[in-house]
Structures are given as structure tokens and as C-alpha cells.
View: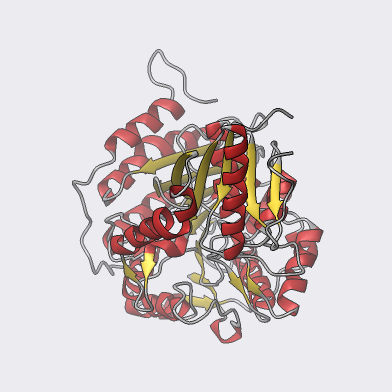
Length: 150
Length: 341
């Protein structure tokens, strides 16, 4: 495999996603590639609070969190970068974005905000590995993946 | 007569405090029947659970086993939107079973129209993946059962979200015509106009993606100008409606501007697609504002049963006619042109 030039990474505010993002940044830094951070907008992104108010403000808040806190490490880096909000569940959003952008690699944490430990059902990383037609890197909770410099 | 498949007293699916997909939705839908003055027309169907044989027409056994085990283990978050608890498996079986009871009740001549008020909803559920509040694809299980009996099934999906699961399940199946109006862009990100079916069923997936603030007149145009010619060509023997009511203007989940009057008009139009009385079932999908859900269910069912309940006037003047025209151009052969065949 040649050095990945475009890396799609799933970002959902979880600690595992932060590790995946840092790994993707390191890889892009080593290869001169681009990092595209993707966050999937689910159904619940469109309502705010227990009163179920429809809220553009809530969507704006998610966007601000995504582009700010969740992608802070990306913003602080010098790699070429983009942040994309995509409608859908995490698996379809990441697969779709990777296909549309011609990404060479998809990077995710081992477990995001969905899924249930010990069962494959609902695991974004497991489904990505099953369905992706391009390489997928699953960064373990220790943050140690294959060395970007290798 | 209205065949009603609903067993809210057996519902043990709880997506958690503050989750919009909640049991109170069923109470609201059923209250709509009372508001519409239809209670005397109701024939209540006996609750039943879908069997494994019935479910495996749509969902592979390993998926069913994994979902069952997940619920038995106490459940949890399946994705950021979708939650299951210990009671979710049985409740999902009852929801799929309700859709089956509805079509079986109609097939045996017990009623004119059926309404399924069950949850969790189904149209986002893929054959092997839960998503978008959905665990089992209720309308797909009913449609697949009918198709296996030799029927030609039309599924009209007017939920504000695209029914990605139903589309995927019947993508390449020439026995089922899937037509959807939905807001776009919006979750789940599928339902583009160019998604028209697989090589085994070209043109048998019809998507009319509509912009935010689209109104009822635009939806009716989609039914009249796009769906009607395609449906006439397909000649369905059954009509199932993925009846979500979240395109209502009060619904918090999306941005279309429909009213209860619009849903009544849409239901009346779709009823004409059925070849005869007793071949139309409306199956609840979304709809998260309880008052809007109550009024819209009541108005829709009144419209197909000859009632007069119309608590809100139709809406009009919103955007989206260009999208309807584009879909018409693609799916309905214009003079000198070619639609999808």
C-alpha cells in the first residue's frame, strides 16, 4: 500500500475518537496527507433537551463542539485538514464520505458513543471493517496503532 | 371497518428518559382514532409476535440471534440514536407481528383498511443492522410475506426521513415498488433522486427528496405526477404505507410544513393506488410531536374511511416543485423521452 494521501477519521466526542484523530494526524504528518474529520449527524441531533424542542441552536452547538473541542488537536496541527458533518449513522457516514472523497484510509477508535462492549452488534469499527472497500485502522484504547512512521 | 393492530399494554421498549421515540406516541396515535370519531369502526386485532420464519424473510438469523442476545443481556446503545433494553426484543416481535396481523386480517376480509400503531418503528432498520430508532423492519416483514404469496406490493413511505432500510431490502426485488417522499438533506443521508433500484428491479425505487419548508401541495404533486404513473405501470395488488407523521410542521425532528389536512389528502390519494377495498395498511413509523401525531393519524384514517375529521387545513406555497419535476422527468417517460424502466 502506498502512503495514504487522504485519511477519513470518525470523530464523535469520545475519548477513543480522540485517540483515532491523533493517530490520523500523526499519519498525515508523516506522509504529507490530508485529514478529513467526519461526524455523523443522527436523528437526535435535531432535537434539544427533554422538552424535545426542534433546535437549529442544538445543531449549531454540535457543529461548534465538533469543529472546536472535538477537533482541537486537528486545528492545532499543521496537516491539511477538513471537518465534515454528514447526515446518517456513523458507519454509513464514514463509508459515504470515504467513497465520495476517494479516501485511502478510514480511521476510527475501537469504540465510540454507540455499541455495546463484548457484542459486535452496533460496533462502528466492526461494521466498518466488514463493509469497507478500503483499509480501516481501528485505534485501540491505549492509542497504540501501527506506527505512522513505519 | 378499521382493523387496528395495537398492544401498548405489552410495550416494554424504553429508549430512555427524554428520548423522542417513546410509548406516549402510541397513546397519541390511538387518541387520534377517538378524536376522529372512528372508535365504533375499529376491529381490534389480537396481538401476535412475528415468528423466526417470518422475520428471516428480511433479517438473517444471525442478526436476529445477536439482537435477541443483546436485549437479553440488558441492552444498551446500538448507535448514538438507537437504544434497546431487555424488553425491546419482545416488543419488536410484537411490532413486526402487528404488521403481519394487519395484512392477514385484511386478506381474510375482516376490514377495509388496517392501521398498525406499534413501536419501535422499522423503516431505517437494515436487514442486518439496527439504526434510527429501528430494530426490525416491520413494513418490510409484511411486504416480504405478501410478496412470497405472489402479491405485488407497493410501499409508500411518507415519513420525513428516507426509509433507507426498506429501500435497501427491496433494492433488487421486482415484486416490491418502494416510493418515498422525504426531506433532504436529512438523516439518514440516503434517498437521492438517482437511487432508482438495482439491476433486478430498475425503476422500482422512487425517491422524491424535498427541501426544508416544503408544503402539502408539493407532496400531493409528488403523489399525482410521479407516484401515480409509476404505480399504474407496476399494478400493485397491495399497498402498505410507512406512515410517519414527522413531516408535520410541529414536529421537532425535521423541517417540512405539513398539516393534519395534508396527511388526510395524501392518505386519500394513496388509497386510490389499492386495487380494491381491503388492500391498504398504514403502519406507523415516526411522528414525535404528540398533538401533531394525534391529529394527523385521526385525519388520515378518517380520510380513508369516509370520515370528516380534518382539524387543520391543507398547507401550500412551499418550495420543492423543482424536485418533483426532476423526479417526474426521471421516472415518468415524457413525450419523446425515456423514464426509468
